[in-house]
Image 1: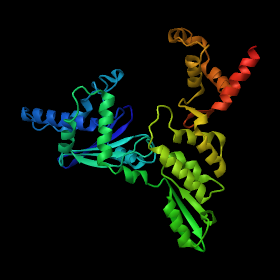
Image 2 (image 1 turned 180 degrees about the vertical axis):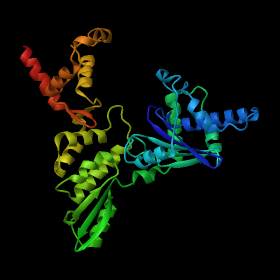
Image 3 (image 1 turned 135 degrees about the vertical axis):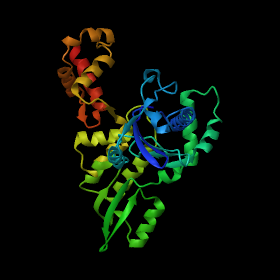
Image 4 (image 1 turned 60 degrees about the vertical axis):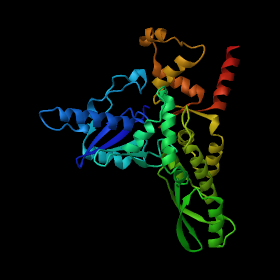
Length: 362
């Protein structure tokens, strides 16, 4: 897996910190623990200069057969200072720079997993397990298991041992409300039973009679929802329910929540009804995670039928193509809008553009 990870290594009552741009998947922390633990023990036993700590070995570890061939030999870990780690850990759960925060505790012989809620697709709660238990589970693997099967196997193990039911019910939006002269806070989404109880408690028939004073979220893809000018509790709740359903799902393409955030940014939408329409129609949008006109131009030339798709030919024409101008022109023609998340396109706009191009060429 090419996700970034933060590592905290506890050894001899001392903490050391590392980053890894190749997180290695769910099973890899155990592989790192076992390899570093065994090697440090053997080196210390045969060393004339004293004990070799397991943490000393992380910076020399390289990607092996558990990683894609393109990563073979790449160094996996870089040591960072405690202040740098604290800064990054403080942002963990707010940004999606790091998908995992892994603790390798050699003193207690435990491995802790923390999963970033903004790194979408994880239906797992935080978990700490003993290395002994994990090794027993690892021994249950088939010797002929493929890397993808190993990941699925370990994902199921962690799902079994973590509180996935709890994480599915975690709030994604917090709303500060006023009603009948009092103020209170609700965490969304609210289930039907919670809505019924709230109406009975406030003696109201419709939760939209409740005034929303402010809304907050730690899920960055919903940040623009909290700026909505016509917030209603039912509307916020519907978006929160939709976000929870989407949040746990893995996607080959850009994740629907990321697409949602990009569309809101590209359309400068501040109406709750429009936000709900976008959420319901999210499959009509495509997000290309390209971040400049030059990259967009290269993408169009390399992928669209009828364009120059041969890479060797493109390379030979490198000095003769103004990718920036071409990408800017093509993005405007396609109706592709650049956002912080990439270029967002509405499929209907693309189809209309392609139809116009066809008519003009006839």
